[in-house]
Length: 283
Image (cartoon, rainbow, N blue to C red; front, side, top):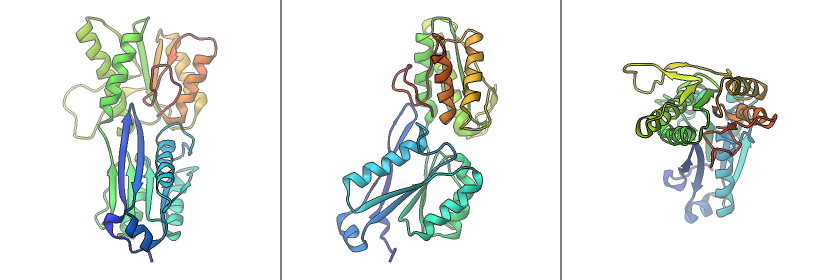
């Protein structure tokens, strides 16, 4: 019943603008008519479906696809902890999802295990490249996200009145530190070409050559993507140290940065997903 030609579902990623990923799914009319509704499913990371970031944008992409093609139905399951990953994925497998999209680097292991155990099940994962040699349909959705972070760093440096900007991460993992790398690179590029010296707090990339896919350095991390109180505390500390723009790479934690700015302070809490430096949303 779930035999769907591989060309029957095309999973694409578009509109990566300052860190926002939108996922779209399209099916051909002939295959959809033969197979019935195509069920597209998302398993979120612990930030929740309304994280103003990749979870939310992945779900928005499926909703958009369902609106444009009545033969598509969309569903999601939110993970409350890492222990929820595998049960949520397996639940969707048992429900006959045409494709299961998992969101985030931290879902690597659970996604790879499920993909190998069900090699004909279509999977996609945002921000990661799992190793699942038995799987025939696992699509890794990765991007050069340091490039859009570079733009954020350049704009932050240009807008700063104090000559100090800052960034911090949700967790010390490559999809986060690549963003922080890009932000620092953008600030340094601004300094070089505008003959300025804007200081960056919260992240110092390591010197010398680094292994491919590794973005090592020393910086400030919360340890999760949900603790908004920690985000507020960290941001307030940056403000106290002279930063007037803070760039959180921390999912819903970034809303804590917005709260810090709302407490009567004039500095700005920006984010990788911001359309402008004063938009309040987090990666």
